[in-house]
Image 1 (cartoon, protein in one colour):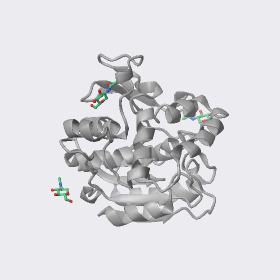
Image 2 (image 1 turned 30 degrees about the horizontal axis):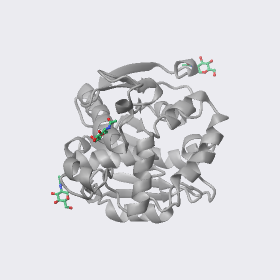
Image 3 (image 1 turned 90 degrees about the horizontal axis):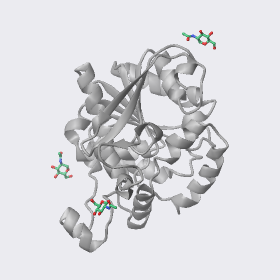
Image 4 (image 1 turned 90 degrees about the vertical axis):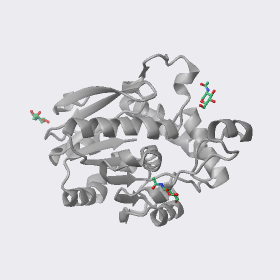
Length: 293
Ligand SMILES: *[C@@H]1O[C@H](CO)[C@@H](O)[C@H](O)[C@H]1NC(C)=O
Ligand SMILES: *[C@@H]1O[C@H](CO)[C@@H](O)[C@H](O)[C@H]1NC(C)=O
Ligand SMILES: *[C@@H]1O[C@H](CO)[C@@H](O)[C@H](O)[C@H]1NC(C)=O
């Protein structure tokens, strides 16, 4: 699909520490025919960036494990915790080693941001390789009533759209990740998956799951949010802004109906979102970009 649009693309397969094989796509080029999901990738490539698309395990391009088959339930035994700790870490490390310098901008959308917060708080030595983080529709805690309630209409909506979106968006929302989000709504805490007191004791050595330490995330971060976003409450974004120690930009997209998925495919996203993001990126003088989520 990318190649069809006229951009050179390379695929790299990398292995995570927990044995999943992930495909990273690298795009560079200067054409602008735009299938929706990859919109930001093209825009970034047009700006002369090396763009990497991170495919989390479980998604179409990353459905392999060294020993587990996708038909084995253990293959699917992951939430955003494992994706953050293993997938995001593997991607960042791979690109850093390939270029021999820490120079990525990371752009996360939705669950991609959650995974990034997990990685950055649990693996600070890897987070240090990331020079800037863009958070589009950031999700850590959640004041909405039920994510399931909102995901149902989104599912219905997406089916009417390009297949690539279906796979890249829906596969990623594993059942365990959804449960994990629901747990956070109930507990009001951004913390590891809750297995119940007895199993928590065995797994975490405490009856309650440990919190992710957002206050430890020193990566310069830009938070972009839409006031029409049903999945992300502005109250939570403001809270995140207060907790993260190094927020360089807090930006409400100046369009009252701008919603969660508009970051991906709104026709106006280049003007409303990306122009500002590009300016910030230029200031940091980096040329490697990874998109997650
Ligand atoms: C860009 O797209 C146009 C048509 O939309 C095509 O004619 C042109 O060859 C493409 N350029 C590159 C570099 O692929
Ligand atoms: C899933 O992972 C948890 C935590 O490591 C483990 O206790 C549980 O047995 C696993 N379940 C499956 C089906 O792999
Ligand atoms: C993270 O923060 C906690 C307290 O907020 C602190 O005790 C810990 O040392 C920090 N860890 C790192 C790696 O900075």
